[in-house]
Length: 394
Image (cartoon, rainbow, N blue to C red; front, side):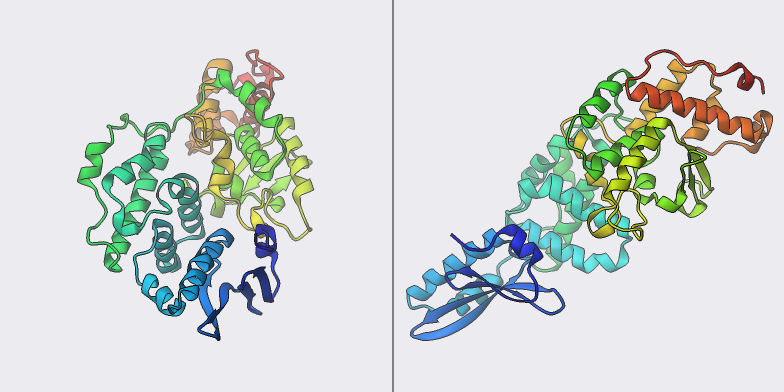
């Protein structure tokens, strides 16, 4: 059994770290990590580079070292064996990493993060260890089938990403065929028409929120709850910064640069329940310099997959909670004008509508709406919430 643990490998400082039986983890002064195997070949000591930590995990490096030690004991040249096998096509995961490295300079941070996290969560468990030249349309269909109908928007993105990797592999000489397309369509049933995101019925929401609250608190779960309570897009929540939050006014003031859909600055009123989530999120700040309300690892932007983990076993997507809110508003808040609910979702509203209600009154209507939503989602009130008389007249 080796001496190193996964955590020790992750936190290893510059230098040479032994795992036993000649296997070492080398960490350069810049932090780059690679594996080296020291063996005796015909009485001569040789150091054999196995590859980077990105290419070989701790377990994979141990397996590789075991194979090459066996070659050395047989009197054969382990370096020649290593080089012979290094020319073989990589696994799907290896090809995905190479594709990512080649394409990353032209991608946004959001696209790059989604590419890696979605494959890691949904595709690598099925295809990751298969040699890229052996993958067929049946393998791809089997990997996509768990989300093909439950999360159609995600499934289409995954299909595109798999195709990109397999086409990249053909161009790299690792496959003789490009990604399957027409044949793949024959193996997957037709998705339902319409581009709506799978949304949770609002009647199920209080129980779901209660279940999430009953689990160990994580930054991802807090971000999910805040997404629900504000009816915001999860990308906006992942971009949220402390400088945008006004606790005294109970408002989240999002600049125009953050609003990719319409490019207009937007203020979200914060219910007491949403403010309580923010107070809990403060405990996750490691320093005053942390700008993200819900930071990912190393203070970076939280990934889409981190927020969506709680829904993996359910036929819904995070974006669908906006539809859940909109349906609840229509059915449980009948005195709230439709334009107010649309404004709460940051949908573009004609200025003449806002003028008709008066901007200050329009914001207070949205506050009444989101406060009612916060109470409902948290299980504090299942009753229809009436708009105060002072706000009903335009």
